[in-house]
Image (cartoon, rainbow, N blue to C red; front, side, top):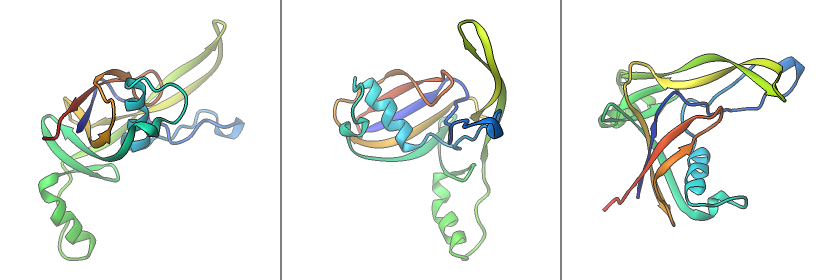
Length: 170
C-alpha cells in the first residue's frame, strides 16, 4: 500500500528533547518525517495504544516527497525530481555533475510558552519544517502493514496534524 501523509501546516519532528539549563531554548529537528514517526502515526490510526507500534508493519520504505503534485527524493534538506535519481547517484560516485535541487526544506523558528496551572513555566523556540515555495506537501511511504486506515492524526510534536491517506498499490 501507499501511505500519503499530507501536511496541513509546517511540522515539528524533534531530533532531541531540551535537556537542561545549558540547552534551554535550543531545538533540533529532522529535515523529514522519519520512518519511526510515520509508524507511530499509522499505529495510532490503527488503534494501537501502548505496546509496540512496529507490530502492525512488516516493511515501511520511504519517504518520497510530493510537492504540488510532483514526486521528489530528498538528500539532506534538498529535494530533487525522482527522474534524476540516476544522475544524482552518478554524481555521488564522481561521474558527472549532480542535478539541480528544485526545493529546499527550511526550518521556521517560532516562539512557544510552556504553561503549568495557567502559570508561565518558561519560554522557548521550536523549529518547524516546510518546503520553501510549496503550496502542498505530502510524504509518501510504501507500507506492508495490517489494518491501515486513513484519517487526521498528530504528526511529530507541538500539536501538528496531517491528513493520512492509504491507497492500494495494485
